[in-house]
View 1 (spheres, one colour):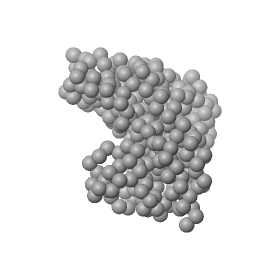
View 2 (cartoon, one colour):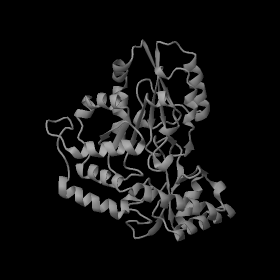
View 3 (spheres, rainbow, N blue to C red):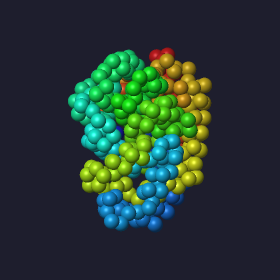
View 4 (cartoon, rainbow, N blue to C red):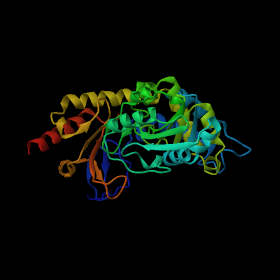
Length: 365
């Protein structure tokens, strides 16, 4: 597919380097934080308070309160006991995968560990014994539950999965894991990068559907640089788990996110900016659904801001009509490209009207 360059931050529109302007329906800035005035104001405040970066280990003798303050507020937001800010979502995932067996040693006796990787799981949580899997998620989950329920008690099972499928959007029913007979021998590692901020009750992700014994053995992680707009990552779960991860050399040896962004995250959570933006996003999705006569062109989920198609001709049609989506191979260069459109809280009704109109033209052609 064609590559386009720009020196402008995309918002409702994007201006490419050749001077062409398109309506922008791509990326992962679902809540429009890249152009949110509250976000910018808090970021400027944070830079004035903390400068542009913090060149130190989080485990140094001197520690900035703002990281802990943001972590406490984020944990409250997602309904967790504790959270841990990391420099990126990818590192958050790999930190968990590097340390998960050390976590097991601290929490339970076992003689055998088996990893179960969900279909198309993100590389952030690829780890020991990873093997690709292309079955249907629900079929995979049911087979894993049956296997675990019939396994020996001295085996610990580690289930690694995304919360929402990407780039081809898929919904996963995590309540299925409540069928596990003995959750004491099961750990869930869930990547919420494409769900936190936009899915679940008030954008708080998928953890609420897990029963208490299972949720206590779940480790959630996410990039913050999608719906929430913060260049960093986060891990959340029980306080025992995050305390163990804080001791890891993968945590101590990594630079933290810029404290100005931790301050921004803190202020956005304190002032409910994410909730306000989610309300606007939900209204935009509802409006588009009413206008879209060609919804059968796409794979989509109720209330979710992404629509996908394996038809690459659709990407070219949109482009010719002034709309830029995305269409590229991901995460592997050998993967088939997906035409993917993302709705944002900052789109206007006329943008959504135009998208619906252009999609209808494609269906009729």
